[in-house]
Length: 359
Image (tube, rainbow, N blue to C red; front, top):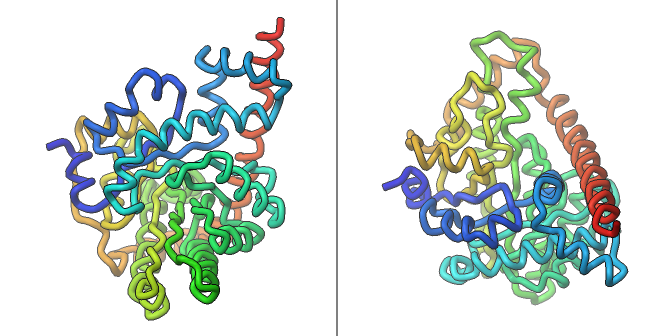
């Protein structure tokens, strides 16, 4: 049995953090579903930028949309929705077999809306309606302004993937926004089964801390933060507040580990997969990490409900001079800025492609 299947049977969903038109048309994604137990997929502007820039798979689609008078952001969202609805249809049997727990794909609102609550709410509803797929998440960042948009979107019945979460505190704030949206639906007599995941970014912690800590602490901070957050997740799932909502027919928001590709060439290429095995959670991983885990992965102990040694490890970083609260805020702010840059790069790529194809 492949390690990917073992992880799946242990209770964690494996999602692919990638999408290209070639993955869809060539049958590769279908093979990942069958051979590697992949049950979902995430996307972001950087992924689409690389997909469009590094292939000719989108040229015909761009030509057609140019003839229709489309350009820029509008043209991109049409391409992205075409890809993601195709992927959603591939995952639809999984979505139905798991009673809507799994089989999800994700589409991000424009990163330029990260601090604009009203526009984010409108964009989330519009994109979800355009895609017209029950298993498509809309990604909203867990910024202060994003939290209000998450609550309103959940209340409106839009499934949300909360992105750009870096700490236990940011996770709890996002989870509470989700809960408020569900509580409002219950109070309004609406179906409370609106799905969500909360995506904690892991490896960026270790990149940020690498130059600040001794070698004995390298590549440990991201995992410790994840375990610390997992304890809050498990505590929340066991709370009376959650149990009341479950009794009303709600479905708990799942924890998702993001940014799980290893950045340090000296570290194991499956570090953030092996270390973050946990039931009722998701690990979305880059394609090379998926292949590596399928090839030589193994599953150790799952994360204990109390977070294991997370508190002790985090204390060592505090003693080494790392202010993880300030760093979490910096990482979220820098993450939002990097997504805007990726968005600008993506739109520049589409403009360049459009000019080439017109000529």
